[in-house]
Structures are given as C-alpha cells and as structure tokens.
Image (cartoon, rainbow over all chains, first blue to last red; front, side):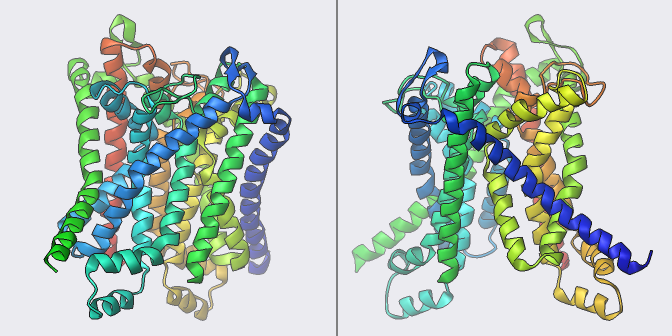
Length: 275
Length: 288
C-alpha cells in the first residue's frame, strides 16, 4: 500500500477518535434524559423527600445545593478576585511571593476532593466545632474553588490593555480608582466566566460535601444546619437502591443545571472575545 | 488628599490579605492532614501501612496494601485506553480538523469535564456494570467498570493539555518539515509530537493524579471488596473509596488510619503536581 493509502487510514482513525468522544457524551446525557424525564414533575421539584427519599420530591436537596453554593461563592469570590488584582496590579512581577502563590494555586487545584473533605471534617466540623453544616461545607468548597476563581480573574485582568492604566494615571487617577472604574469593568466577563465555572464545580461536588455538610434530608434554614445536596442525594439513592426513578430524576436535574452553567460560561466568554 | 492616600494603602493591604488566603489555606490543610495522619503512620510504620495486605481496623491491623493495589489497578487500566484516545483527539483538533469543528468538539469536551463525578458513577452503575455482568461475566462491579468510568472522566484533562502543547509548537517547525518534503502525518509524528512531548507528558501525569484521587464515581462501580484483584472483572476497593465508606462510623485508631490514607494521597498528589510545575518552569527557561 502506498503512503497515500496509509495516510487515508490514519485520517479515518483520527476522526474515529472524535466520534468516540461525541458518542460517550451523547450516550451519557441522552440516556439520563430519556430515563429521567418521566420522574420530573412540579411536585418532584417542590415537595420535600419522604421515607428517606423513596417518596416525595427533592426540594430540600435543591435548596441545600443552592444554599451551599451561595455560601461558597460569597466567601471565595472576593478573595479570589482580590488575589488576582493584587498579583497583577500591585505585586511586582516575578517576585518570590508571586511564584509561591502560583505554586500554591496549582497545588490547591490538584488536591483531590476527598482530601478537602477530610480536611474540612477535621478542621471546620470538629476543630472549630461547626458540626456538619452549610457553613462547614461552604468553607470547604470555597477553598476548593479559590484557585479557579483566582486564575480566571488573573487572566481577565492581564487581558485589559495597558493603555487603560497609563491613560488613567496620566489623568491623575489613583491606582484603586483606575482598578474600580476601568480594569474591573473591562475584566468583568472573564471574571464572571470563572465564577460560573466554579458554580458548576460546587453544584456537582459530592465527596467533600458529604464529609462536611452531612446528608440530612431536613430543610436547611440556618447556616449552621446540616444539608444534603442533590449530588449527595443521587449517590445515596443509587447506592442504597432507595429509588432508581428518583435517582434518574435527580441526575437529570443536575445535568440540566450543568448544561445551563456551561452555556452561560460560554456566553460570557464570547462577550469577552467581542471586546 | 491625605485621606485618599490612606484609602489607597488600605485597599492594597486588603488585596494583599486576599492574595495570602490561599497560602494560608494550604498551610492549614497540610498541618491538619499531617496532624491527624502522621501519628498512626509512625505507630504502624509507613512500610507496613502501605504494603501490609491485611486491613482489619477494628482488630488493630492497619495495612492498606490491598487498597493501594486497587487504586493502581483502576488508575492504570483507565490510562491505557484514555491516553491514546485523548492524544489522538488532541492531534485531530490541533492539526487535522477544520477550526470550526475543533471549536464545537472543544465545547463538548468542556461539557464532559463539567459533568459531576456522581453522575458518571450513576451512569456506570446503571449501564456499564450490567453490561459487563451480562457480556463478560462476574458481578459487573469491577476494575474494568472503574477503568471505563475513570477513563471518560480524565479524557478532558488529557485532551485539553495535550492540545495546548501541540498548538504551542512553533508554526515554522511544521512549515520547514513540509518544505523538506515530509507528508502531513510524517510532520506530526516526527516533528510536532516530539516538540510537544513535555506538554503531553504533563497531560498524562495530571490525568493520573486526577484518576487516583477520584472518589465517588469509582466507589459506585468497583464493588469495594478489599481483596487483591486477580482479573479485570474482580471487584476492588480503592484508597479513596475506603475513606468515604468507613469515615461514617470509624473512631479512634480506625479513623486515624483513614486520615493516614488521606495523608498518603495528599503527599503523592502534591509531589506529582510540584514535579509538573517545576519541570514546566525549567522547560520554559531552557527555551523549549
């Protein structure tokens, strides 16, 4: 066989690999949509679970998920964006502090969620005596998503043209005024993308959450209440064989959330690209 | 004017504090993970802890050897198929497919990365496990099921990092190779891939780190018996699964042993990541 024939076969193989990736994604999402759609109803979303989740809906786990994610974001966003601003606007380039921060961020990003769970359990739940609660879970999640928020905010701030700064300083504006009025607005779409992606991570997290927020099915009202998120609920429903129908419904709702989150992140990225 | 100056200084201090938060976090995490894990490691002995195959924590026997083998078995078998598939997809996206198609594929890969691990575990439990049971035998909950699910989960890491590495190869390399009469695929295999080698290795190492630390998905599909697997169809328990399964009721030395397992994982992953970041830094300084 000539080189041409061989190259044709190789090309087919490469395209086949893309086909496998698409098939995996479509297969997983399609299967869960088809099997889960019948479980979804108004009651499923708005009613609390009863008999350990065998009956009723999943409303308390939806509230638990939103509550926990919100607490994590409120804690992580200011620190993450603040860190990015400090590193890019105040810190001198290539200092040891800057390099140490970069290494820490990379290390934090690589730590498996189960280790975060163990840490959150021993530090927040036990040592600081917060118990299994929204607060313990939110703090643990906040540390987990901090690197994502910092890195995306840093990239967004770097991308702001240098003239913005020099022109603003030339007009006599202070550094903070420049950041507040020029740099942050210009970097906003990038920062928002990072925040949206972190929301996706917080919504889907389970190993760290089960060890720090617990798995109580009650409605979480106070920040000190324990809670079960949708991801943890899915795990328990499926592993303990409580209700496969409700497990499919929960999985479908999680997938829908993730698809929406991904779409929003892309939207905000495209807005950035247009600028 | 003076108030303005004080404000400016205050903002800088606040921002510096937020920048230090992640450093503080990693110090506290390291301290507490070590503080809970090291005493038991010292008592049992690190060698015995890692290689003793007898895990019987309520009777004072703390060997996680079977779980170490379990984690390695699932991780390595997941890499065997996802690394070639991931690298081929990365090459397709960077060098072969039209940019529009690559863009769409890249969004699908992002979506794959966004799906939570419990959803993968659930899909594995409901679809992959019964398929293995029906067509290949055994109980279905197995190393193989874990390898399939984990492989899917690390594909995005491998694809994204390898694609970036291939894209970073200077355009002249390719142009010169083509000008010398090489075909497109000869250029890819002899010029582009060798030049992107360190990035591709980084992709594999980070994929491995992600696979070994993954918990819920693996826990849901591998059956979790703490025995040495003798085939791809045997059930197996990983280090991470063991932590989640027993944390709920463990106390005393038993709980300490679970933390010690976490310490081992933590140290392993941190070394892996530091090695990658430091070698990448060295790589850029060499001008590669």
